[in-house]
Structures are given as C-alpha cells and as structure tokens.
Amino acid sequence: MIKEEAVNKFFLVPSALIASEKDLHVTTVLGSCVAVCLYDPIHKVGGINHYMMPLWNGDGLATPKFGNIAIPKLVEEVKRKGAKPYQLQAKIFGGANQSNSSFNIGEKNIHVARQMLEELKIAIVASHTGGHKGRRIVFSTGTGKVQMKFIENTFTNGGRK
Amino acid sequence: MDTSGLTDFQILKELENRLKISHDALADHMRIAEKLKDVNHKLLESEKLKSNFLSNIKNEIKNPLTAILGLANLMLSGEVSEQKFLDYVKLIYDETFELNFQLKNICLAADLEGGVVDVQVSHVNIKHLLERLIVSYESVFHHSKPQFKLVYNGPELFYTDSGKMHILISNLFSNAIKFSDKGSIIQVTAEVGSNNKIYISVKDEGIGIREEDFERIFGRFVQLDSGKSKEYPGHGLGLAIVKSLTELLDGEVNLESIEGEGTTFIIALSEYQQNEKALQDIDFDDNLLFGEDEILF
Picture 1 (cartoon, helix red, strand yellow):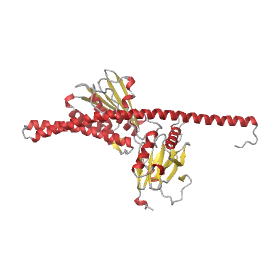
Picture 2: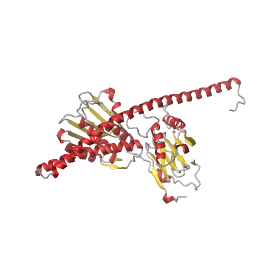
Picture 3: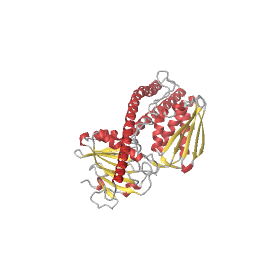
Picture 4: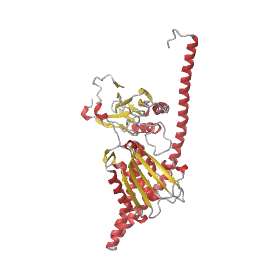
C-alpha cells in the first residue's frame, strides 16, 4: 500500500478534470454539479471530472464545464494514461437539487451522465446522486475508491456559495 | 406496494399516478436525448470552424515572426544608425508583445478546453492591474493612438486569480483597440455593485455589434467578418476565452452595443470562494472507521 505521505492530494475545481496512473487523492465539492469517476481496475488508472451544466450549446469554449464535453474528455484522458475503455467502471456523485426552482440542473446533470455512460458502454458500479444536500468526495485514482461526506453548507453551484 | 386497506379504486388511482410519473420521466429523458443530438450537431459545426481558425492563426503567427526576423536581420547587418536601432528594438518588442499575447490565449484556450486549468487566488490590486495594462497597450498600440480613460471606484483588493484577470482584461482591451478608429476613446470603469461584486466595463467607440449577433460573438472561433474580405485581424478566440474565464472566476459577461456607435463589455465578478477547508476536513484512508455521515464507495 502506498504510504499516506507518498500520496498527492489535489483539489479539483469546477470545470476541470484530472486522470492519473499514480495514486492521487482528488477532493471536490459538489452541489448541483456532478462528478464522474472512471477507473480501470486492471491497469489501475483513474480519473475524475466535475461539471456544472448538462450540455454545451456552442457558447464560449467547449470546456468540461458541460457534461457532454466533460465525460468524453475524461474517457480520452484516462485512455491517454493507459486505461482500456472496455475495462472502465464509473461512479457518479452529486446532482443535488438545492433550490426550489423547477429548473432542476442537478437532475439534468445526472441524466446526462447516465445517458452518455450508457452510450459509451461504461458500467456504473456505484452512485450517490440527487437529494438536497451538497457532497464532498475524495476519489483515489490508484484504487478507484471514493469517500463521500454530506456537507451542511448550502452550495448552489460548483461547490461555491 | 402495500395494498392492504386500499380499495380497488384507490389502487387504480395510485397505479395511474405512478404511470404518469414514469411517463414524465421518459418524456424528460427523450427531451434531453433530443437536445444532446442538437448539441452534438453544434459541436460538429464548431469543429468545422476550427479549420478556419487554423488558417487565421497561420497569419497571426507568421506575420509578426517574419517582421521580427527581418528587423533582427537589419540590426545584425551593422548598417543602421543608433536611432534606427532603437526604433527597430521597439518594433520587435511590439510584435513580440502581440505574438506572446496570442500564444498565451491559444495555450489558455487549450487548457480550459482540456479541463487542466487551475485557479490561483490571492488578493489582487485590480486598479494597479488595469493601470499597468493600459500603459502596456497604449505603448504597444501607439500607432493607433487608443486613448484609455480609467474611472476606478472598485475595491482596493479583490480576492481572485490575478493571472486570469490579466488575460481577461487584455482580451477586452485588445478587442476594443481592434474595433476602434485611430485616436478614439476607450473608457474603462470599475465599480462595486450589490453583493460586493466588482463590475469592470470596457467601452469602445467602434463599429458596434448587431443585437442578433450578441450571443454568437462569444462562440469559439467565431468572427463576425470572415472570409477573404476579412477587415479585422484575429482568430475568434478572444471573446470565447473572456466568457469561459469569467465563468471560471464565478462571474458573468454582458454587452451593450449600438451599431456604428460602439460596444461596452461588462464583466461582473464575485470574490472567489474556494472551499479551502475541503482538503483539510477529509483525509482519505479506507482503514479508518468512518463517522455515520461518511460513506465509502
């Protein structure tokens, strides 16, 4: 097992993604945002994204702020680090509904993750989504494990107040 | 479901309700699937624009480099007067300034699209940042004589990413100069609004933008004048970067414009609130026993 001090910690900001063949402990804070964690257990390569909106509509840059950009980009990135697409397993988190508005971004974010992963034929092995509370997760890129904790603060977007 | 104690009618009603919920969910699913198709189509369109971008960028890099090489060659010949030598150094500086800006933009766009961009926050003196950029732009674009006027009523220090702010404002200045006539005024203002947001606006007296183009202008690789008759230089990345960077920094960008009179770009930013405790509060170790509210997947 890798010693604690040998493990690098990393904070993932919204609209970013990271993949590594080394064991990184990536923390991120999710409100209505969704994080998709991908892991190849054979090659021990993992990656995680953190997107805020379901779909990019051609406005601004095509960044991983949007689910339909962030998910394929993450797949590319884990492949680049040595993962094989057919070995990939996914875990999805976040997508809380933290406002009373009917325009539920969280739900749409979850929807896009499930739909795109199905299209990409990547199995979802675990998920903790929806509800009304924000979540803080730590993803280990070396083991694929995710530790999740609810957070009391009212986060509305991207883990920021 | 537990049907004890329910009449047939109530069971039927409940089943109807559940069927309706599942129908609604299916309709939602279909709507998103439709939208995804539409978005993918837009993505393909945008990829096509990428090829325009590549031909634009060729000129944006090749032209300044040719000028720099030519000037350096003249200086090396040893046949230029001291005054000319200094003039050439200034020209090389100006060309390099522009080239450096364009390359920074391209690298940043690649980082933003690749999701590898980080936010480095500190207390930034925005007034100082604006003043320094104005001096740089007035000096480099001395031939088009832009007259910057700054009215600063913003905070002394603002918690944000200084490097990103630098590029954000540079793009707004560069855009304003590009669409300004020689000697026209570029008005820069900064003020504090509600919720302690800072509003920075850059107003030019240029050709303006038609209202129907307001949204399109922020698209990547989009240039309102394109093709062979293209009058204004550029690669169509600047405003897309402005939009994506502002959003990364917890803000938004808006514009006001009257055709033939000028355009004002306004960015509204909140102080960046990254949850710094996130790293300290939770220490990943699956050998530990977790509290009730912690779950391991």
